[in-house]
Image 1 (cartoon, rainbow, N blue to C red):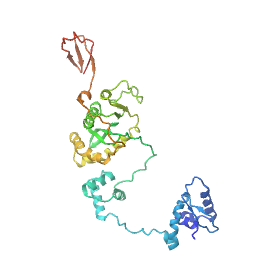
Image 2 (tube, one colour):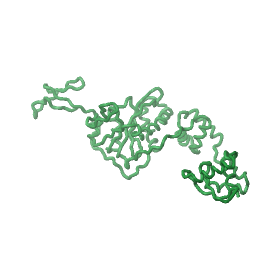
Image 3 (cartoon, rainbow, N blue to C red):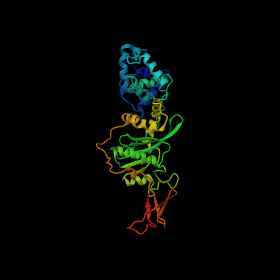
Length: 379
């Protein structure tokens, strides 16, 4: 019968140099410590008696693993602890010429792709059949990519809405989407499925770009329940920097959404916009490379590429199924341009005119009313 000390030494060689009395003290301490997550009893005999002892995590092993090691050692001695797979080539290894072809493609065409994006291109465009993990390890082993840093502390994600159309996210990202040009990408995404309903490049995010993105989403899907947006000036008035938004003084976007029956929700921190931020992280790592491969450098062509080519593939890859069945979208009957537009009020002057952007507009005479002096006119 093997001694516990011998088995510990085979699994944790650093214990070999410990004197017998120190090893016994560690063994007793690991048995008594309540905080050790001991995973099983190894009922065996040490050199002195027949007391059962427990293998604790302090020794770098779990007690449940020790019986599995005892059998090979009884049959072959110390050689039973040696992994006979060492030094042998895996039957599932990638052929050398295939690995060289992968590295050549990465160096010549896909040098700015992530490992995951690169593997998807290999599968879809080059008939590659091996796993993503093999590609990642190959690129890292040959210095093409660095291992990703460890993630931070675990955070609990906000639960998604149950149905599509219950809440949409809209945000913008300024990035160098093509070499030498910085554009804003406005994205409207469903909270329940992460499906992108609208994405368009603009020179600068603002009221009109928000209207254009909302118009695309509503025209394609219908009216939705709420919009989750940041505290940009085109969405909210904020009297004090960093303070609360003024919900009683809506912007043009807030007024238009209220007229359509859509609630506007303010995202007050980066953590609150986590789903949008992660989506933009994915887009920033994939979309510039896709535009480069398509040889697109102007905004009009980039917007056509987004709508006709990239978004369908992106949604197929990243959209998920909702938790519930059905949809919260409601068909829209009307003219969107009458709602998603700039509307302002002016007071009619004594001469029955209103002034708007350095223009004087005259109100024609009406047989139903003598004049419109001091009346409010909307435009």
